[in-house]
Image 1: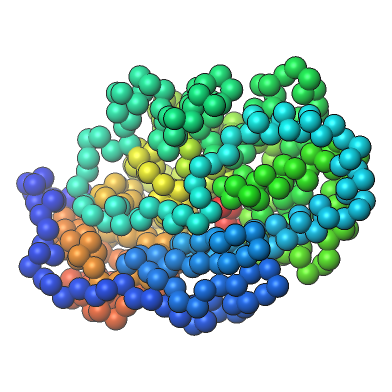
Image 2: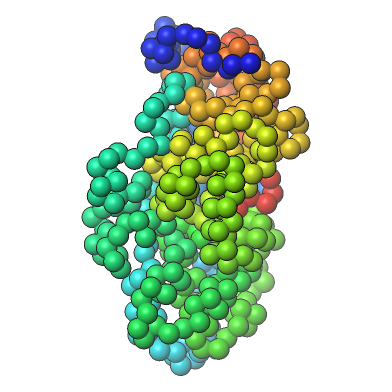
Length: 442
């Protein structure tokens, strides 16, 4: 059964919301009421009491001795708090005399030379990722979705790469340095010369340290990534093992038990992980050029790439799964990337635990089609408000769907939004599919 009826394409861009002015201002939420069992204050952080929303996501602000951090999207508050605890633990290690002695015995300038090859992301810690509302602004397909402009290809610029910063990178090529983090060891290996270290051993130690701290070794948190590099290098070159490092940290600062990462992210070498991602995507029919661009995309960490590949692999027998990569490549921020990664992960959970999907389609966002022809919308959002964007999206999707529309959300929905969607015969599933505990998304 075809999800989309034969209707004029222009209809998909009609703003039916213009006929209805009853919208709500996305509210500010109480942090105390939304953080559940998490304390608002500890020795290492303070969560601001009021939490603004943008119609889809809640935006938490966290003040620390290391600066202000933001967390937006399902599960990201816990991620940031774990990263802050990790920073405190690394700070404690670096102030320990045993570590200082080992660091002094290493060639300090060598690490400085190594660090110049490690590209750091330009995103500020305080910055809030661009909104995910773009995925709900229309339900029409776009012939240009996910395709790079010819000029970008000619200039060698990839999505999310700052062309002004390319000349500062080894080789001056954006193609080789699109990953915001996690390419440290690769860049060191390219450097050669006096940087003759067992790079595989260094990377393994770094991933082990990240695992003990319960954080993603490919984190986009600039400060944490730099601290992991520095501490691992000093310990690696100075002969200290990860067990010695973690023994220097008070038990209260080790939060690995709270992590939502899977062991394979920590235990698999990055080169092997990339090979797995590439082979998986090619095996399900993704064109090779799209696979190459995905592996070089600046807004998808290796952890996120692995989740995308695993989700698509798990959707065995679902038509259209390879075609969604065009949308995945089209994003313009890390927040948008996380949204699509989580969306696919929710579809995977639905497919494996509830009922098999027939196919996936890109209609603004990723839409699933169930066995009875119903349209499935997965929305990994914090708080869904009734806005013009949601009005337009829901009205148009209801028109082009031959079956009923079912919405699964990972967070909460306002009463007005629920009433309006119910009036369009949408079925709401709240809290819907809960994101899995093992969720390697940073």
